[in-house]
Image (cartoon, rainbow, N blue to C red; front, side):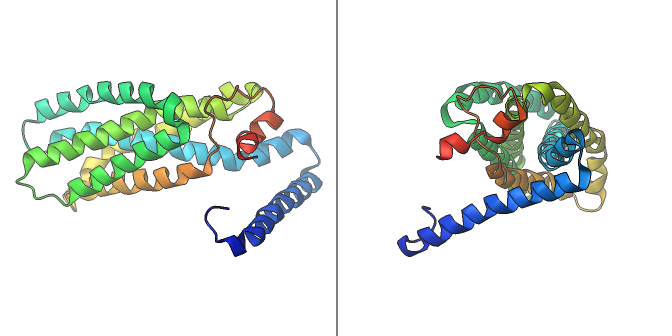
Length: 238
């Protein structure tokens, strides 16, 4: 309602309500097609699963990609790798301090975007500015490490008890595809030296913007049923 002018609030409210009806119709059509509650639950949860899995993929891909590409930053490659590991400590401290203060969604969004902007800025830095490149690289690693920690907690809070372990395991498994692909990213530097960082930055910024589609789970009890999981964030909005 705050995004539209006074004259458009009623119309905006009407549009939002219509989408609720569209959701009911889609649910009815899916039920008519499948007529099996187990299959219905699987089909309904596939979009949510894919969305969360995307975050896992992006997080592992960028996290391990930056770790492996740390030796390509100007300067001593051993020192760079050690600094890239040490920067994870303040990232975890930030995770601890922010998660219960500004919430899961905003912490995840800011972390991804910080990492993305840092990686993209790194890609356009002159190669002779080693210290500035290293600072941007470490900032990117800081952001994605914080996001990695948030994803673990956030995923567990989004799914109901009866599906939590299986969904968390599935998302983690799909996310590991990113860690499998990450070791190949240094090869992209043969075509364009900054290409790996541009790829990491683009994926991080996109994931940060998409995080707004998730409901906030701050101070909410873990959902025990699918119905409770579907209603996450609705009471807060009302």
